[in-house]
Length: 251
Image (cartoon, rainbow, N blue to C red; front, side, top):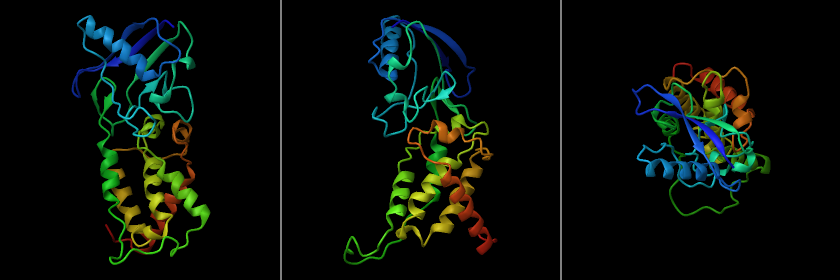
């Protein structure tokens, strides 16, 4: 496959960026998208040019590090797929591909396709811990958990924090991410003591981190590689409203 790439290049957070053209020739359709970029970078290095900077880690769709916007779609054209799991057979010989970083005020560009997603870390940190009683281990089945709740908690816990939801949202909102992180604890008995205070704390940090507001575009759900449902946003809103009604003066 011979492809034409237009890649966002930016030397640093305060530098001006631009789209630069590269020719990616002789690519195998069985390559992953990141493997294709690896080959392009090897050729750039041999030519004495700076390689394209992009973030990656596990390359197994687990870590959430590899996010980038491909032809205007977060993670590219294949649904329920991270960039590292996207294969070149999703494209055609001779295609032109535009590659950009996440576009959000809350995700400032560090260099080229790499952005700072530490705002997500601060939201998670605000959630605190689950309180537990010390002593001997309790039997696994001592606290019954309805299967529907367990399944829903597991679905929420599948969120890998890649940031595609923010990148796809016209408002740059992080409600899908935050609601998933709140729900995977709030749905289980162990998460009940801090359920409302956790919700309030995580929402407060989310709002402080310059994310936008959710206006139900549902673009977040469409591009989420783990297919997290916007139903969790509704649950987050209910818990937040309940927290405010029960203790409106709490911070």
